[in-house]
Length: 140
Length: 158
Image (cartoon, each protein chain N blue to C red):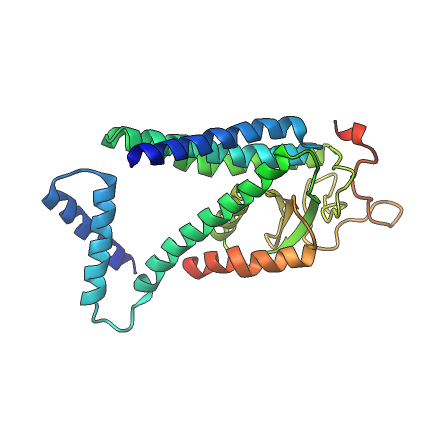
């Protein structure tokens, strides 16, 4: 019984890491790559660690596995958030089929402050155009 | 509230000491047993919050795991099939959560579900900007998250 659970969990974990790595190659722009990679790899590593905790019925192994999963869950989203924010700030274009970009023009370019509504207007008085790529090559 | 939780921990510690096996499953079983005993023995009608909150936390964990697996399967399917099915977009999401802790938990949960990625929180902590992979309608997405994840999370925290 435990063997079957271990086999299922480790297979799903390894597959999700595999899909994350294929996702890095296949996704069309930076944000989608980030989005796919961070979550799938967190899930994969978490499942493999749970496997290790079930495999060795030792209190120290279980404690370490739980601690690693806990810190992974706390830190991975923050890293993704910071990388995504920096990418948007430096003007990485979004994919050409992006539907909507409600963040466009919300940043104050000098102070790096983010408005919740309205947003700073540029010198011509109109709001900024969304940063969406025109062709596939821009986001390669 | 916190008194009941400490009492529950004490009861599960006693259970572990009496059975003499230091495993997490045994500790969890003792915790559930202690919860049951406290629930039976509870005569104080005014402070019932702890007994509503623990089942809510457990159901929230299962709800979150279900959402996580569902979204992961969707993204994995999209990665391995040749055609792209997604419609990405950045959505403005007005927050109901007020304190830093609530916002932190909500953004962590949202970031961990595949398909959504938090880009930034505004200075006045009223809105967050989310990069969504499968966006059919921005209003619909905001409504779904408000009635699904955020409502459940706030029901536990408040």
